[in-house]
Structures are given as C-alpha cells and as structure tokens.
Image 1 (cartoon, rainbow, N blue to C red):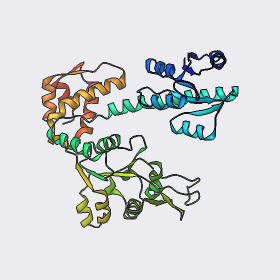
Image 2: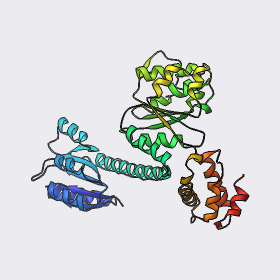
Image 3: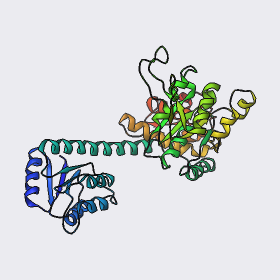
Image 4: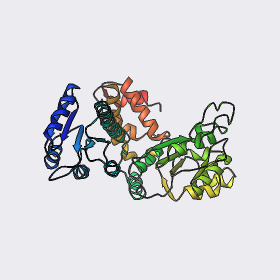
Length: 385
C-alpha cells in the first residue's frame, strides 16, 4: 500500500484529500505546515507527498528544496489556490512531478497521483536493477596488473576523454567500459554497446547512424541508430578493428563534428556522445596494412587501457572463483558450492587461453557436473585441458 503525506495548513483541505485517497486504498498521513511535513519526511519513508505552496513557517517550495538533500526522496505534487505559471515552472525545476490548482479536479488529482506513484515505482525498480547489475559486473582482482587498470579508470572516468581498450578476447574489456561509464558524469544517461564484429558490413552504418523509411529494401520504418540512442551518454564500440573503412570514415566525422546522418537522409543530427572503443587487434599493424584509418585511431586513443590476460594475473583466480561460484548459485537459486585448495591450485596452473570468459564457463561446468565440494579430480575431468 502506497504511503502518501498531505502537507497543508488548511484542515478542510487535508480532511477532504484524506477521505478521497483513503477511499482509493492509499495509506494517508498529515502535516499542518511545511516544518512538520519536512520532519515527517525525514523520519519516515513516503512514496508521495501532496504539498501546499503557501504555508506559514516553511512554504512548499522550500520543503521541496530541502527534501532534495535527503537519501530517500518521495514524489511531490504541489497544490495551491494561488498558482501561477511561474510558480508551476519553479516547482517543476525543483523536482515536483506536477502542479495542481485548488480546488483540485478529482479525476485529474487521482490520475496524477497514480502516475506519480508509478514513476516512483519505476525509479525504485531501476535503482534496484542497477545495483544488482553493478554487483554482477564488479571488477574482481587485487593483482598489480588489474590495480593499474582500476587506477586508470578512476582518473579517466570523470573526464570526457575518449578511451581505447585493448586486450585479448575474454579479458573483460566491456567490463572496463561499463565502469568508466558508471563512474562518469554521464552515469544517469544511456550506456549503449555495439559489437562491430557481429554486424554485417552492409548493415553497420544503419546500426550506428540509423536509417529513414524506404532507404533500402528492408527499411520498413525509420530507425534511430546507436549514436542517437546513446545521446547524452556513452557509446561502447566493441571490436572496432572489424569495422569497414566506409563506416570508419563516418564514425570519424561523428567524433570530429558531433554530427551524424541517417542512411537515406541528407539532414545532419547533432549528438552528444562519449565514445569508448575496444579491440583485440593490433590497430597499428592494421593501419600499416591499410585496414584501419590512422586519423580515427588517434581520435579514439586519447587514453589507452591495456586489459591484462588471465595468465598475467593468476593470483586473482581464487577471488574470481569465489565470485563466479556465488553468481552461479544465485542464478540457480542454490547455495554456492565449495572448492578445495588443491583444485584452486590446479586451476591456477592452467594456461587460460580464453581468459576470464573461459574460467567462468569452466566454473559453471564444475558447478553443474562436479561433486558437492569441487575437488581436483572434478577439475581434471571437466576443465577441458
């Protein structure tokens, strides 16, 4: 049941609103002025606050301003008999969901309450999912090699610098890109990832820049490309070394001018995107062979981050094993399996040509097929070496 706080210095208004909202099965609380209301918001968690603007001691806009400093922020609907467009605009700028004049229209009031509560639910759900995702995408490791990567992320993330991440397949390049975004000023904006190697060369331009309806045979409707989808946020171009030279030239223009053009259009569209790229290829060699544009390389590689292979950070394997055992158990709704020290030592001695991705796959195989306590014999049997 949603909890709603009414803040109004008029008892009649509070009583009327309370009866209406309780009839709709909301749990309703009251405060007779802004100061009392602010204290109740500090003491309890509310989903929604209906707040008068003009009140003694502390007016509604001041309440709204001070609530922004709290960890738990409910949705606000401002109500007033003296409302003006300027007041409504100011309330919205301060974070109010809506502004309703007195006396409120019943249908509009209930619709606004439902919409505000739905937004509150979505915001809460998004925070929970983001927390789960961040936990799942934790960068595990204390070895010197991975500590260098972490330190670089901390320095680079708050800036707008473009980053080129290099490393073998399966080392966690996308995880590095994710954490640069999460620690950046763009963290509340979209993070859009594109695997350039997985998209046919004839479709890569449409994928990145979008297309207009009818621009080619299967273009049945207009489509926004990844640059537009990531506007204001971060675009991660994975395996950029596999991108065609034609697409490379258009990406270069987007980076130089912050402009893109959809396929089938001659209209420029301004975009604000931070580009992070990654590759498992030696781009300098690709440049020598005429397969990659040197000017694009220099645009992308303002900051270079080399992600180490697992063979260079084997001391992190015990930490990674524990992380994967916990993750897999959570996915399956079971308790994490144990693993013996002998098995861990044996795993540390393997070459891990597939890096962390391969290690994760082996752990999942051991969890499914191995004994309740994973031993060295299980590893020898299922590690595929």
